[in-house]
Structure formats: structure tokens, C-alpha cells
Length: 130
Image 1 (cartoon, one colour):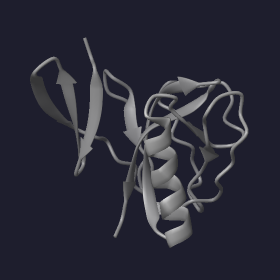
Image 2 (tube, helix red, strand yellow; image 1 turned 180 degrees about the horizontal axis):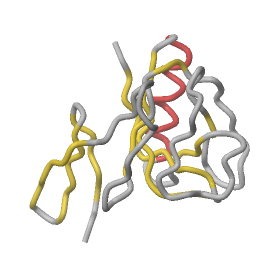
Image 3 (cartoon, rainbow, N blue to C red; image 1 turned 90 degrees about the vertical axis):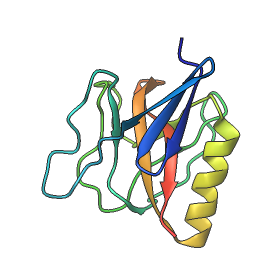
């Protein structure tokens, strides 16, 4: 049973009890389609500046998108793709802090997307470029 996901430099470490294993995170590139979903449907966006930091949804979540990213990464085929991505409710404070810090610091980020939340693509991890 999957307990936690940890992003480690382009790989995701999955803790299943006391066992960790790594697998690559597919990353979108400008010249390629945004994502070729694997069996777990985890995909990354392009690195770029955040286009927004919108709060006030029905739960403790933030909506955002990557400025200049022309194709929304949507590996789970979520039905509402009008306003970008929503943070997961698991580890919400950590994700929101990372996003806000990147926005205020003018950093480029990569959003790791898996599944849907409130019918929008769900952010499960944030990578920040130094």
C-alpha cells in the first residue's frame, strides 16, 4: 500500500512500509507532447514561472499554472481544465508554502501532476529551480 511520495531530483521515491524504490518522473518538453502517462499517470510540467496563486476553494487548496506553458498536463483526463492545477489536500501546507515561496522569489517551478482533485489536475509535488 502506497504511503508517501517523495520527489528526489527527477525521481519519485515511494515509501511502502519500510521499502523505498525509485522511478523516473516523466517531464514535459517544449518540442514534445506534455506527457506520455505511465501506469501510475504521474507527469511533470515544464519549468516556468507561476502564473497565479489562487486560494479560496472549498478546501485547503491553491490553484496555479505555469506561465507560457501552452498545454495543460492532464494525465488522468480531469474534466475541469479551465484554470490550471490544484494542490493535493495531502501535505497541502508544504505544497502551498513551496508555491508561495517560488512565486515571491521569482523562481521557476515544475509541477508534478497525478490524478484529479475537484475535477482538476492535482499537484502532488513541486520542484523549484535555484
